[in-house]
Amino acid sequence: MAARGGFSSRLGFVLAAAGSAVGLGNIWKFPYETGENGGAAFLLIYILCTFLICYPIMVGEIAIGRRAQSDAYGSYKLLGGKSWGFLGLFGILCGVMILSFYNVVAGWAFGYFLEISFGDLLETPSFGDFFGTYVADVSDNLIFSLGFMLITAFIVAKGVKGGIEKASKIMMPMLFIILLVLIGYSLTLPNAMDGVKFYLLPDFSELNLETIYSAVGQAFFSLSLGLGGLITYGSYVEKNQNITQSATMITFMDIAVAFLAGLLIFPLVFSQGQEPAQGPGLVFIVLPGIFQAMGPILGKVIGGGFFLLLCFAALTSTISLLEIPVAYIVDQKKVARKWAVWGMALLVFLIGLPSMLSQGAVAAFSSLPFYGGKSTLDFVAEVFSDIGLPLGGFLMSIFIAHRWKLAALTDEIAQGNESYRGSFMNKYINFVISYIAPVALGLFFLVILAEKIFGFSF
Ligand code: PHE
Image 1 (spheres, rainbow, N blue to C red):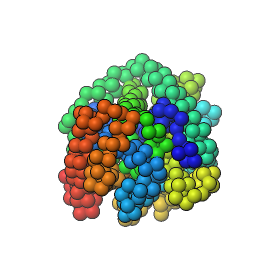
Image 2: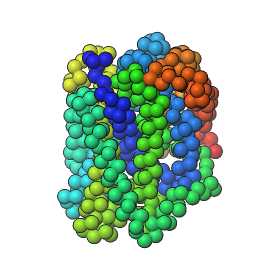
Image 3: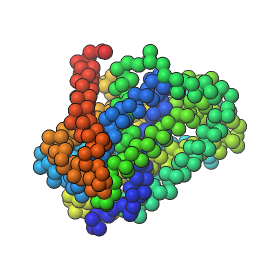
Image 4: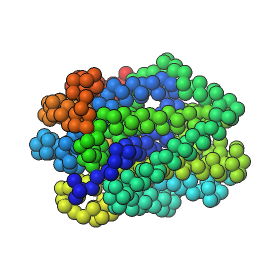
């Protein structure tokens, strides 16, 4: 273990894993998905999906990593044989591809933070136009997303304890503090309560298959599941730690931040009489208008604070995404950590260029003919995240139930949690992994196949 590095304490692991989970998914994606999918009803399905499917999958992933003490590929190979190693490789591929576009969006947040706090972004006459020009601008994007990748690599190069754990221990508490201060302000605005109502009173007439599809994808993405990220982090966890308890804390922190992000954003949106269903631009187009209305000084403080929050959240996630392929190279190819980190960061940055240039900079990337004219960034996100992650979770549940076996899973979890064996939690996790996850996710894929490939509509 010493040679591979490891977390120094349970708190270190929990904060790093929660840092991985809490990210753009919570503060950028969750509010706009909720806004587009009818508010409270989406929130409810997302929470249900988290407990009925995702929590046991999270426990399973951490247990696989801790048992095998290896990266995603090495762990599946060690516990399941060479052919299962492919599932690990698929996860690593998803990690690389997700990081490649995630870093682009993180670069936007980084640019917005700098330009609101230290520039004159808030003097812009139209934030919609500004955002459109901004994401299509090559030089800004290159600088900010390269900057973000360099900061990520710098931290990951410092190792599990000195880099990942330390950064998370500083950034996660700060994130909560900034979030709470901003919410305190947003709830005092006129009409804030209309936003709270939209967010918390469910309207089930808005519910359809698309809502469920989005909620499942969102839950996997937000909890960083299905790609071996938690196998990787789990491999750095001590045997005496209680996995189910840690997973509970990680899940609650993730839900809490998504929930709080909604509680911050919808009152802001409604206080300005804006529409909640704005799509991916919600945070970048609607919010700056609101910060502008606060006046030049308060706008800079609150607006800058918000985008700084977004950067912190994104950074603890990019760190975990980069660690997935890095752990693979260090463990399997015996490359020194430093080289693995900088080489991988450069490679992922290059892979991300088409996504970066797909927001108007290069027409061929911006409108893919085989993908209904949507952008490369949308394409990569849909294939490797919306579909790839639930697929990874589906195959992992089959791996545990039929190859590694539930008894082995129970043995691993029981280390550090003596009362686990035979408990309600034990039965619940086994039941979800053997039945609910494979059946529900299997149905999910049949529906997607029918819709996306054969053109059925439900
Ligand atoms: N969970 C992160 C977020 O919500 C994204 C992520 C996905 C990070 C997969 C790591 C692995 O932003």
